[in-house]
Length: 159
Image (cartoon, rainbow, N blue to C red; front, side, top):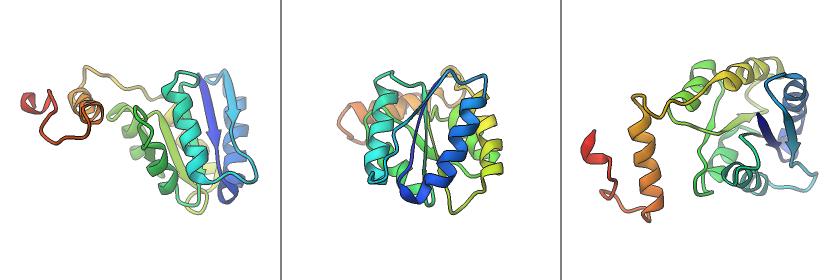
């Protein structure tokens, strides 16, 4: 699995711990760090999400102060699904239920040791498009690709 990571200055410490964990994990084949001292959380989030959407990375991990800003910014890239995850249930559900390719965490919220536990769950989680949440994810995708017009989803009437 190719993983891109990134953080602005207020997420650098946790991002470094995440990077170290990912580089040592056998499930990860490559880690690309987009961080720079002057990068903003929106910029690094847009770049990471675009790499995932373009197929240059399988997933991304973004870190800021709370994980909320990076999730909002990354989700603005069409085709990207980012989720803030600070507990095991949310991290697993973000991938398995909602096919989120981008995990966002907050340096001010979780400790590096706990972040490693979250990453361990995240790396194993997979989305099943034929499962219960598959039609809902397709409905979200339809909404996004049809110009964000409520009621235009082809799956809405099927649920």
